[in-house]
Amino acid sequence: MCGICSVSQSVAATRAIAAAQGLVPMPNGQLVTNIVHATENIADHLTHFHLFFMPDFARPAYVARLWFDEMQARFGNGSGGSRRAMLAPRAEFLHVVGILAGKWPHTMTLQPGGAARVVTANELRRLSGVLAGFRRYLEAALFGGPLDAFAALTDEDALLAWAEARPRADLSLFLRASRDLGLNRLGRGNDHYLSFGAYPRDDTCLFAPGRVNCNDSAALDTARITEDVSHAWLADDGPARHPIDGRTEPDPEMRTGYSWCKAPRLDGAPAETGALARLVVAGNPLLCSLTQKGGNAEARIVARMVEIARVLPEMERWLHAIRPEEPFIAHGETPPAARGAGLTEAARGALGHWLRVEGGRIANYQIIAPTTWNFSPRDASGTPGPLEQALVGLPVAAGEDVPVMVQHVVRSFDPCMVCTVH
View 1 (tube, rainbow, N blue to C red):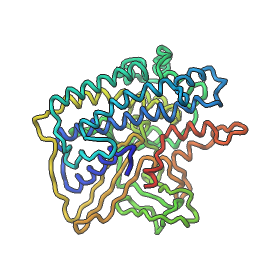
View 2: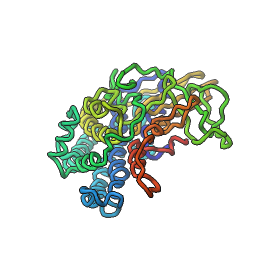
View 3: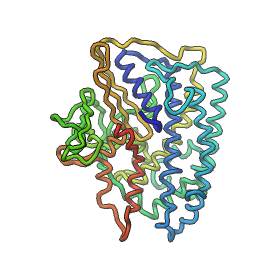
């Protein structure tokens, strides 16, 4: 359904089928899935930072800022040196998906029981070289230092000290501009964070599933998810439903609608999802420090950088754990009647597929994409979604057609309205 997060969609779909079949993936297959999935998510973070978020700082509105000339040289349209320098390492990094899964996007190798392709020892050595080369690029250009050291930062002061000591790093330039514009104080949602958990291995996940509501953590009960359509251009035939019984029927004449997006709710409340939510739910000390006074646009970008620094070394460990001589896939059969949920984390956040089988056929299949959570309209009680809340009170300069701060806050969520409408 998506050419941007197609691996994430495959992961969610295969998990929904595996749940319906009662199938447990082979360890090798789970490792391959994690590596392919992480490659897409990291490449997505890198693309968002270099091609979408940072170029907004090179706009004429900021020509008087002390950092503008440097921003224009690195991220300006056509001339951006950092933007161009990122493209070749990103392309080389995506070879990981090509080697393990044949192609990207719309990879078909990932299956409910693992991965359909056996990986050889020679391919593992080649993959190790690809990851090593990508690490060198990240440490030299984006972070200005070792990934493991950046991932170990614990608070705001340590982050700012890191940036000050590495002024040529692209991340440091972002922090200079962000602090000058006050992005660490803008774009607060409702401080309710949701993560379905990412990169399982054995009985744990690298990023644990859960929820945090105003710094109070709680276990995640996905049975308490509902979808409200009272302000969507969708047919409304009663109270909000759980997605396993959900409906998606367009109704462009819906008089109270102002969006094609449903309003998913957890325990009746909206929830923000994405890299920031993943790290806050996982208890990452740096992101918990940056959000002590609420979520903000800067923290969402920093979270993506922390995730890159945290996940790439883990990919190296997953690679070394693959045993080519052992099976990569298990096989199962879908029973005539079954239900299954496939929950994972795309780059933009919590992604869920819900499947119901009756009489040997698919009776219902519903998807909640990450941007559906973040860009949801108001629900029946009038409560806005995270993005709508984050826009409240943003400054607007005289004569602005599209306020620049609005663009920064919207882009901090990295929206994908395509998946949301699907």
